[in-house]
Image 1 (cartoon, rainbow, N blue to C red):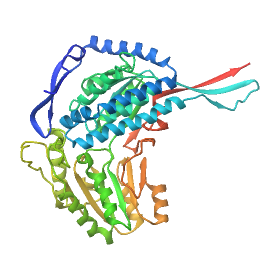
Image 2 (tube, one colour):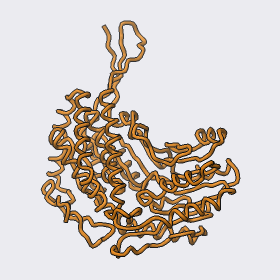
Image 3 (cartoon, one colour):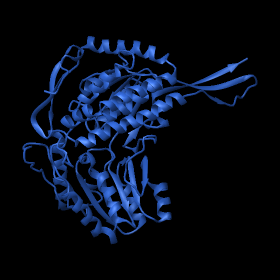
Length: 474
């Protein structure tokens, strides 16, 4: 066993994590906390730490955050190994995930230094109007299993920068990275400012509904996000919900089709398609249809499945058995509904990793716009191709989903680019590139892909601080 946190917060109901490439290999031991006394200790310590931290000048908070991030970078190999062992992604992806989370955090450290009063015009003489921002207090971060380091960092860094305490509820499949981050945080911030609370989702919702937190930031599925949102509403707690996506790319024309397909393929299959921002629908101009299918299929067959710790692996396993079964079921349903299976479509056997949760990279062609392949977030290495005849049809297909997270267009037509920017109903828009977001840009979605303030960038302050209107008369 690599990680042992079974005595954390006094213990609780034990559970283990396993290597998804070798499910018989136990990686970590943990305890699910349900004891009210243990929870009270977490909240009391967080409240004391937050009161102390809020008094630290914002510029100093930013400096302390940068020092924390420096130590995270110094330990990136250790954190990346923990991610790969519990989540399955290739080690290089795990490293890049952690480093990107740190890069976003460095921008947030700058936001702490830039935090300032805003003045606005007054309606009366001898009155000055000010807009102030103060920390929210103690926040809950509910994190998913697909990005065990980046998602906690994405929530931790703005929380700390703006003077809050943070309690992290990691996924039961991938807690190790959160514990490692909290251990580093303990060396840079007041005791209890950053804590890990391993508990079930229902218990976290109970705490939220009871108003124990001053805000909850959730990243995960729409189904669970609905439950978190309802609990937050019951407790009158502000909620930031980052949910799923069924992201589409329109390929209309491209002077460099190979370069275009490289970007589309990477955006679709990184992390085995287990990303909310993964491209899962390729909406292609009919005269490019066959060339795009051939190019994507060739790239899919070139992936090498294996244990993420193996340097030659380019596609790791799915994260856990339940999700593995879900991807199998949804892919089979898509084929039954009429999508043409070009490659993949079934579990894969990897020598030396028998029993691992490997699923062959899959390409589906001619998917129906109302079918599973076009509407359901399969959340695996499965990509669907849908041909179109004109721009109206392409944009209709792009928007014909309950989700609205991210989208992409490859085209040199200025008119189509302008239509895409005007008509794409997604929170993040990409023209002539994949769906990789910058570290200083707002991150979030529309429709069922998100609710509340966007995270990352300057917009993060809308969730991590409270706005106050102040009137000064003399």
